[in-house]
Length: 415
Figure (tube, rainbow, N blue to C red):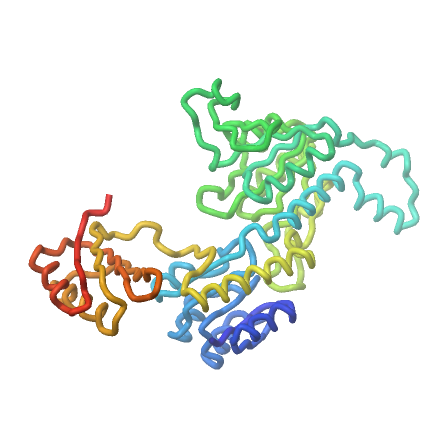
């Protein structure tokens, strides 16, 4: 199996792929036409990327490509629709960098509260201003609002609780219940969160309740601009705002107004105008506003996180090689159009499945999904075949008669 790695990847984990029998080509920094050329030159079965964008042209450059693995949580840098059309699996590595992102988010919170970057800058300039920098609120007893309560949000909540903070949250995954009094959950939401964390109904409710708000949502059409005018209007004057998720989740014009009009202080690891590569010029005036601290989109960039992500990449690939299954696949259809399931019990012999599929083909019926289950000993098997249109009783009889090692063929409608 040929693998092309188009970004930095730990040598020890690359060796693990080689030990698994793969041929590995590593060309970090591929992008644009260079990636397309590498796909044509190396003809990989599997492509591994981190920050490299994978457009349709790169996917189409080698028809034998079967799997793209994003060495990270998101996958918006990959043309997933194009991959799906060409029958290419796309998988990601969710949760492997959760602790790293939560650590940076909390670092930004501490930096805003104690103005650590400004302290350092003044001292480097020879300025001593203890009287000014002694003015800090402190975090103990403050309320942290977390918008999006997935793995990163939960990691951040644990760190906040260790600092003696209160935590409120909102997430689409928190489902309504008919009788909130029975669960103790506020505002009619199920308390599927650790004890002591309050669930609120909307992001704006979190913004209004918190002294500090941190965003931890994926970039989707639903979350684009989730922190907008109404959100910042709801925030308390002088509150802190943290974004280590995606730039698209924030209406930056509304944030600018909040900084200017309400004294909102912000820590941003993501923002519009980020250079595509490892270095370059940054053009975004929000980073120069007083009270705004920016970092270089480094939330997931710790050695611990990168090794954990690389381990997950290895697990995805080795599982695929040994079973044909793809852990963390993001573009497999959850529910096929199939309405009927045909179960064929048979001896595990050459030609059985071919004869079954031949009968189905003769009836002009498409197979949406198929699994052949082996029983202990390897002699008996059952083929479960999902189809969109029903087979007649005569067709089922034809399947049973199609091969001497078929015991029976039955069909039922999928509930």
